Length: 450
Image (cartoon, rainbow, N blue to C red; front, side):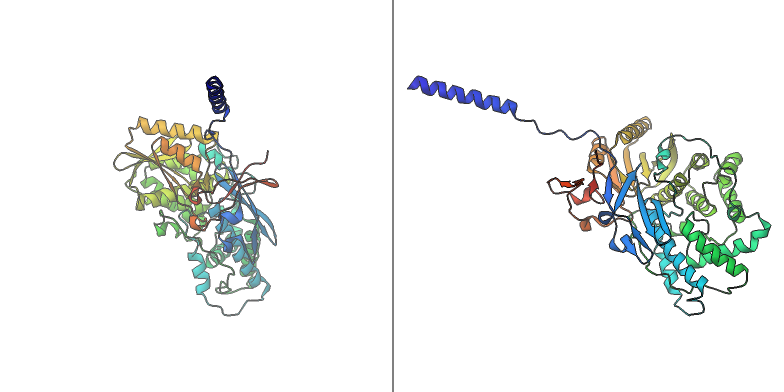
């Protein structure tokens, strides 16, 4: 009896040992992740998702850290790169609809409260102040992380050059009406441009007189800005100013910053920057007189060869200006390849990214390693990464493990406490997962379909 009990106990111990060896080990966290898809409803306030003149497509693709939205309008669809740009595009569609009412005479001559337009303008003072859209399905912002060549386009449109004598009156009317409706006269938005050109043509021909922007712009959408908001004057570019005057002012400011004349000329002639967008970028840098090496920022921008990359760098300059004015005093710009970093007072190292969502992709792992090496080479006392949107939990964890402080401003996104707790879906089947920590992402990421 004793021998049986002994052998039974020994057998049980062996079986338990084998069971323990066969049990799967806890899954290790993934080394990297893919760029996600999002549901628009998880990212944006309801007022932004749909309005009288637009509807945002339900699926949002993230490319190179930038959200690519499809904006449906009665006149057709627009592909929009970045959340900040989406707000601008929605406003432009609303303004275009108001212009069309003036053009048809339906609202012309009726007195409407002027403050409606003024209030709408004020709602779009973003930390990053975007203007133009993109025409391609993908974002060109990925070029912001690698060196690029020169622009292939060499001539500005006549309304941006300011040199076509026969169009002076028309272009002046176009700029004035754009100012009254709170839009950029050079916005590369075909729907807005069609309405603005019709309005300018009627004004030039004498069909309209005086101030016409008394037509209420419907469906205004406001954007809550983040902690880096500030330097309000940077957004106050008078869009009615002739482009040649804007270029002349920019040259003077760049000369004061120590930008070589040849670099300044190359930047001025770069057609991927609109006159107003270029002026906003130069104003941002000019507003940081104590920051050294601003010429390097202009030199990098002069090589820009893509419209969306130009918009990205405009927003980045304003973002750095706002950071400098509010949270971290910058001392010097430090180019790292095609990325612009900065040193801060007290020996810190700062990288700002005007991205919607930072995922820990293989490409981002490589970039972060380069930034980390640059920080070590400069003997930085602290390392800080500022993202205008959000970052994945994996990206934040990996960066923090290497000593980075990560700040996510969540520009234009729903507050974290309002983000819906929805499980990700892969095609038609739903997987049960643990509760998502709402602060980890601006919305629920849809995994890329296999």
